[in-house]
Image 1 (cartoon, rainbow, N blue to C red):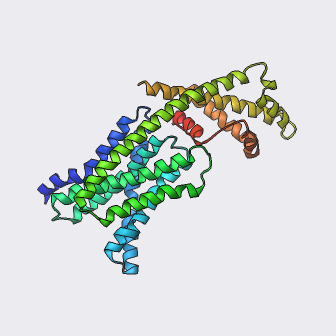
Image 2: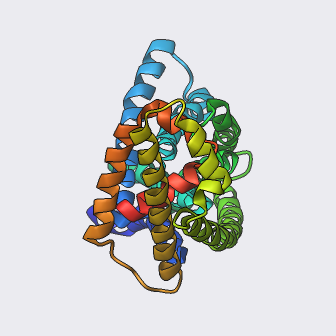
Image 3: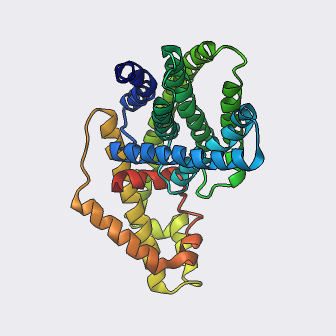
Length: 337
């Protein structure tokens, strides 16, 4: 068995890892750090172990047939757990573009599949090499692809808002569960299912990468110009007569003078950091990795102080002129990490 293990283990474990490495290599902006990827893979592995115990409990308590469980219950349970990781990343502004969602989603699925296949390596003593080709190139890639699809669709539906309506999770989740369930039905032979996964998923993710790259390039160009124009306006002598300046003037009737001054400082600081973040991303696009200096970190500390000074009500009052969505919050996360 030991000799056989050295043959089948790489087939069962390496394909998903190699696919994930290719996704990371294709990301010219280096949006996702290796540390974050390792964490997400680890969480995916823990969820795989959790699924084993939950599934065992369901089978024992319901006396459900194994085929029914694998076709209907397992896809629902596993995709819900994997999707929960992406939901946390979305809600904490760790995902800004489709490519982030694809990488994180596939990383969750990779961790899940690695632990699952390690378990089967211990239990399927007599499985032939065909089984491990299916598990490594089919099941593992399916796990990563299904969660990547959930992340991509959810990101596409919610990227222009700060808050996320939970209903926006449903389309991606439904597709991930359906794909997983369809794969587990084995309507065609396992080898054919594996070939279908390999033929469909890579081109789909490649198209998404191209679209995300164009979208990010356009966003950087347009928003950089807009932020530069706003900063120039804030620093000009005519700012008081601008729409934002007049709006801040009106807020003096609702907030104390020092709070309104802090709002202006917050607007200037936020715009400076947004410009800095876009500059860093543009440099990454051209192959340079610009480190974040202490001066920038000090600005983040100042911004947090101003947020406390302004308060929740004050920040809500700033929304009409501080056009902030999750993509804007994400760019600050990129700069701060």
